[in-house]
Length: 232
Image (cartoon, rainbow, N blue to C red; front, side):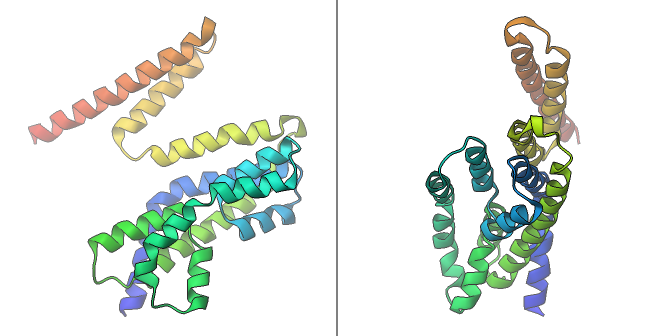
């Protein structure tokens, strides 16, 4: 029962982070199609590599016509952080067989690592392998489904847009993942709205204005929230 309980606990623990995983995976699918990969090539890349940051970097290099060796080295450098993740997880998973370790290593992601490590530190009696497996599995499944959707949507994107369409969306994915409380939402809504409304101002002053007003909105929202907390 402990194994099953921790497996589903890991899945539940990963649910909040999926708000960032879904758009990022969709963007990777759109990016792959926009640089000329077929649907099956896109999904092969997603399943085999399973690393969004390095995938987007490779797609950018592909669009620029870079040699394959540069693409491989770039992806390798970006993914070196997983070596440190593995070293941190090793003490918790060292009793597993080589096959089990290989499976869990393949499913390693930034999100699964962060969720699992924070839970392991706070809960000593947790079944490490089952909790990690639950978190990593749901992230992997959602990533692949979202990448499929992105690849299908990418076929609808005009060829003239190219990778320039997918690249700005990657920042949107990072923004969505950062919207975790009221002040950050207020800052994003105000800043984004002002940036659109003030786009026509000269010398990009509209962007500067949006930044300052977005920060002010976030600060005001946080101050109001604290006052309400003190009042209670």
